[in-house]
Image (cartoon, rainbow over all chains, first blue to last red; front, top):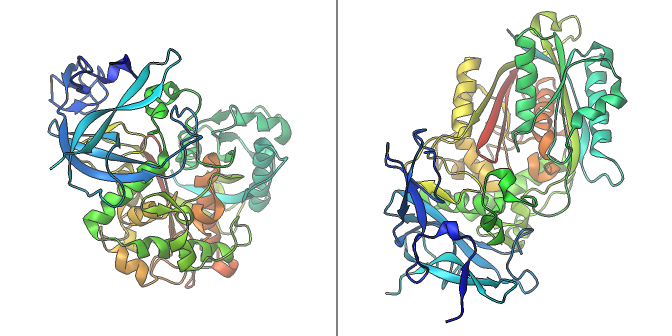
Length: 140
Length: 382
């Protein structure tokens, strides 16, 4: 398999072979945040611990991005195709914003079950595939 | 201490090729001073704000080098509201009796870019590189969820835009002065579902200024000073859904707009039912609709009937964005909140012209909201 480079290594917990998002959980109040950060936005405590977030959740809201995003978009703006974006509510008590795959305006529904996947997104200067995280509908 | 507004002025919003934002700020400042019947020599404190201008206080070179303290600040789309608040607070603290707040901006065409590096707004570069750092996505997604939860229709979105451009067509200084038929709005290009081209405002250019003073000296300068009954700034609490958020908690909290408007009503000692004209942040129609409830003018979901019945029009129960709002004026970020104050004051003084709210309104509200979850609300009265 060609070498895959994450768009930001800090977004992922562990190996990309079993992708998990890397969040942080407050040792004091238990609230979870993504991406991981040290300070807790809920209770002001410092020193959150890193956690691997759940990989399945329910679509909370969505839209379709119909125009090429401005700088610093790294996707192919010249051959732009509209793409869906949404927030997926995970069991960890948070909703994560992500690009969505395998769905469109006709099939997207608030409340549908989604799962985490990697999306080949661009190629870096060495020709390696750059991947980001995305969610796609759980196949029934 | 009570604060009064003596004068307001605009460099009307729109496109002004070849004019710098600082030149526009100077135009607005002189318009506000003329309106107040004062000169720059009378100003003891100044505050200016802008996204595109690093130091808007450099306008002082063109106003006159009088040695006054001139502070700059920037709080995203809430900049204008916070300029007025900071000027009022400085007067209350005893730093001077008469102040001016000036907002100015000149944005490139198209959606706002988040800049070269997202580090400057506290986010990872990946967020922009993957095409997620876009305000319109947030506006669309908050609107989509709200429509789902409270039964707001696409027709309600379209009617809100119809009203905005209708009001713009009646406002001589508005940028978009052409009414747009409902079916043209409903058929316009999709930008971010469910929001279409004519549902959005555009970044624009312009400036706005407000001259204010201690109320106990206001009568020396104005026959009908407008009182700043309340001016409140709030940032988001944990749990509110804000623009440019890679994640949000399931636990929910009232938005900064809810917090700011509640505190403003408490400070003013009146309720939302006593407001007779309002300007609310309408970056797009979804947020005008949601802000109606967040500012207390109706319950969640009631907007469907309220807007269908025309109650937010100029002759309705709660006229909203009487000058066409951001949709008809665009958004020069630094100036936008002060444009709202200019418009409410026009209405309270009966100077609204073709867009005058009938019945001699005596109380009004302004509301701005923006990244990273900030809101300013003012209550004004005569």
